[in-house]
Length: 149
Image 1 (tube, rainbow, N blue to C red):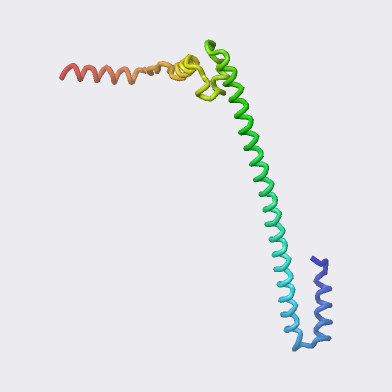
Image 2 (image 1 turned 45 degrees about the vertical axis):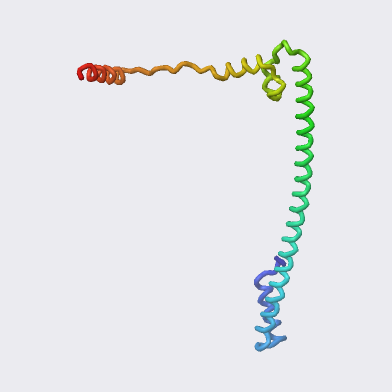
């Protein structure tokens, strides 16, 4: 901390013992300990206050940036939806391409484009039946049992 070696501390202790005497030395050591602990607490409090103040300022800046980003996002979304609505509204007989269909709000998409989009999403692949010797045998045995009863 102060770059004081143990031997230097011993010399300081011996000088304090000679100057103060054996009766007052423990009292002075306690007082010095109290003062150092108070100074340490003060320094820690100042560090904590400075850190919290810096965090508060950073959070305020982040909130401001977040607010600006959300405003910009709203402006872009409104502009894009107006532009896409204008594009889709100018050609009512044509269907919008898939990338526009996904980007447009539901009110701006023509009904044929909606039908195409929903019909594609509802298509399912037929389930593949897995058969092997064990399942085939079980099926055969069950069929024989059902036919006997």
